[in-house]
Image (cartoon, rainbow, N blue to C red; front, side):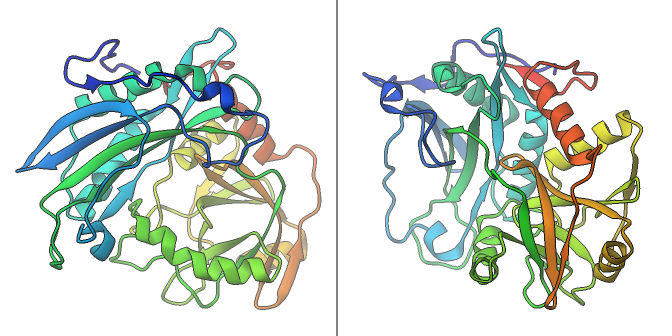
Length: 358
C-alpha cells in the first residue's frame, strides 16, 4: 500500500516505559483481549483541534463522572491486526479501510474526524515501539484497538465539544477455537434502518449482550441477526459478517445502514472471486436457509471478522427447529481463511496490494 511511512515521529511526544512487562506474559496461555502491550497512543480534541498526540506507557486514564461518554454514549472504535512474518517483518492489513470506517462512524455519531497523516503516524510508531509483542506463528497477531470517546464534562444531551482518541494493543490468538452453534433471532434486533448499525459504535455491541446471553443460556454460542422489520432476512452473526454456501454459490447480505461494512467480509468476497467461486451479494430469507438445510443444498455457514477471522458454524436453530450441518470436503471457509491468512502474514502474493509494511 502506498502510504507515507513514519520511522521517527516529529509530531508525537513519545515516553517509553522503563521496563517492559513482556517477559511476564505467557504467550501460550492467555485469553483474547485481556493482556495489553507496554504503550498506548492518546490525543485530545479541544477547541476544534486535535492536540497533544502522545505515546506513553499503558496506564489508566482519568475522566470526570460528568464525562459525556458515560451518559450519552458517544463512543466508536475499530479493530485491526498486525502480523509478523518468518523474516521478522511486521505488516498491517488494509489499514486504509479502518481509517475510512472510523471516520465514517465519527460522522454518524456527530464526532470529529481524525487526520489521516496522524492516524498512520500514531499506528506506525506505536507498533514499532511494541513490535516485540507481535508474535510469529499460526493464529498469532497483535490486535489493535483505535477508539474515540466524548470527553466533555457536562451532563447535557448534545454532542460533546471535547474528545479523546486512543490506540491500545493486545497480543492475540484464535478468538473462536471451535465450530459454532447459533440461534437465528426472531425477536431481538441488532440494528434498524436509519440507525447506526453500519457504524462501529459501542452501543451496537452493548445492545447485543442480553439476547446473546439468552442464547448462551440455551447452549448456543452466538446469534444470527435478522432485519428489524420482519425478522425475515439474515443480516449478521454476532460480532461477524455472515456467509452461506448453498450448492457451490457463496451468499452474503449487501451492506446497508444496518450491516457493518466488514474489512474481512470484503476481502473474502474478492478472494472468493479470485478463486473462481460464484459470489452472490443478496438478501437471503430465513425460510430460504431452512429449506436449503432441509434439501441438502446448504453446505456451509461461516462468520468473518477481524477478531474471529473465519469461524465456521455447524448448527443453527430458528423457532425451536435445529439444523446441523455435515462435515464436507473442499470447504470454502477453510480455503478462504487459508488464503486470507497467507496474504496477511506475507506467505502468499498480495495481488491487490492490501499489505502495509510497518
